[in-house]
Length: 150
Ligand code: MN
Image (cartoon, rainbow, N blue to C red):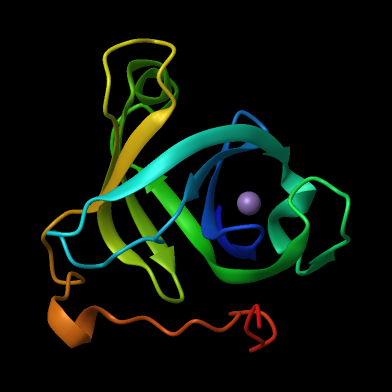
């Protein structure tokens, strides 16, 4: 499974999490995923989260790491099109999403060859699920409860 949690922390971002090896491998995407293939989105690899975190919605209290509101912005199945463990190691993942909002083929590619780098780019591949212009806008509410981070 995969989940995208919208997180109104000090700076609002979207946490993309892919289930791999029994954990949620995670990236913080400041501007969120775009279904427009021309919009490359920075995705900063962050710490793995436990699988139980996938349905978390709520307000992380002041004084705690990541304080602020979080909603489940999208979730569903992710289907690797290439070996995901090798891809994570090499810094290149090709996969399909079957969520409520996000569909079709996507790539996540490390921007730097250096093994220390944690910056990746999340990009929609051109396919029948890609959209441009105002058609690329996606609802901001939770797919679980309908609430927004506001
Ligand atoms: Mn976050």
